Image (cartoon, rainbow, N blue to C red; front, side, top):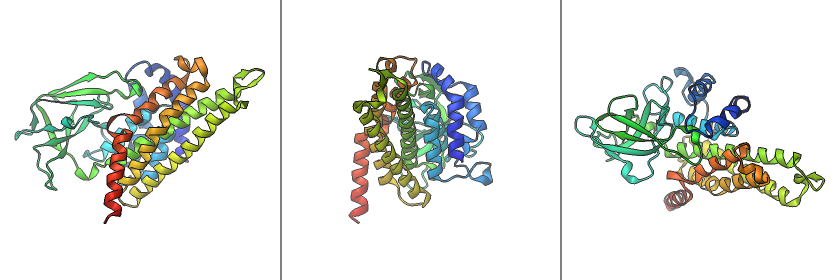
Length: 338
């Protein structure tokens, strides 16, 4: 019921806005407000704290349903959900996780609790969020690790955010964050989960793929060539058949990984496997959906053009296929050589 409600909300509310912010670089405040009113930022927050208290599996499917209409909105929600587990009051403020591309994104905190001078690149929702979650050195660690996750108030002093123009996911408000004398406080370490972020990101990719498939199927049914719909031609049918098969496989991989988190089991292998699969397949199917539209798909008038660009997001950054396969190989070796 919830998943269908989210899907319907996306279809009714997001497509008109998507055309506008697909050519810009930040979601509008009214859209963020509507998403918050639907309770989507609090899906994982326990009911005792005012949230929905849903399982990881249901949250992943809900994000996929939202991404069918707009990947940027789903991405902002996913970042908030993942980072919200680390902030003191996740229902109060929109949070975000920094997605450092390079290892040097780890910043140093001085003895006074301030970051002297550092830049965190490619932060999703940097221009929409209240908090930045960033890996640091110099803060006390409860586990003796040299790396500690810390929160920086993006509305505080010593913070400068510059916009980053992106190929896809243009509504996500991506930016580079410069920290000069900004205060950092230790986050709740139990809230930082790479497996969760992989699962949510893979779920968004599934949703974008489903949306592109829906657009391609609808066009194939209505576009007539040589006296019949192009969906009657084998070349188009094979594209749609391959898309449908891979989307089902991707959704099952995501659900399997989420189920392990729900069971409080190690999901590093399953989440890496799910994300490696979507990162290698979904961008291809975004391209195929655009190809079904022919020249129309290459214009800004077609929603599939935006989905084509958004689909590339899952294949870049810290969770790109090569990185995921390396993580997957390491996880397999550790789990099965014990």
